[in-house]
Length: 101
Image (cartoon, rainbow, N blue to C red; front, side, top):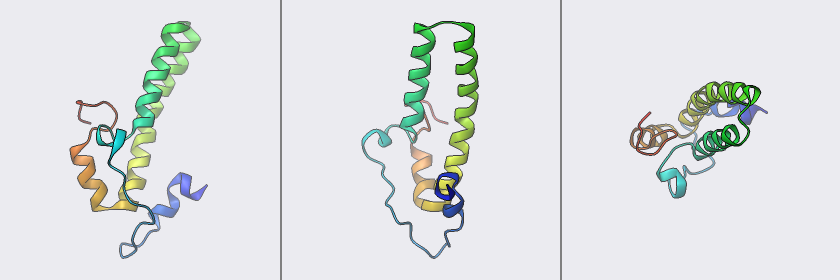
């Protein structure tokens, strides 16, 4: 739970090296958060297939939550990977390819 919440990454000393290597190949070369991109696509598809008010309210809430999740995850990744992630962040869009954010 600590790792999921980012608490263990926040406690990483600046002299310690991360356990894993930052992966910037594959889908990660196009967007920093391919899972969030797939959720946006999936939720939009669900809304088009099953267009009810309840569905769109749930999707709207999800679309509001996802950027908050990204913000939280980015803080954890910066704490964990440091300058490597900051450089990657400057060159790669968060969710949508060809749309910097």
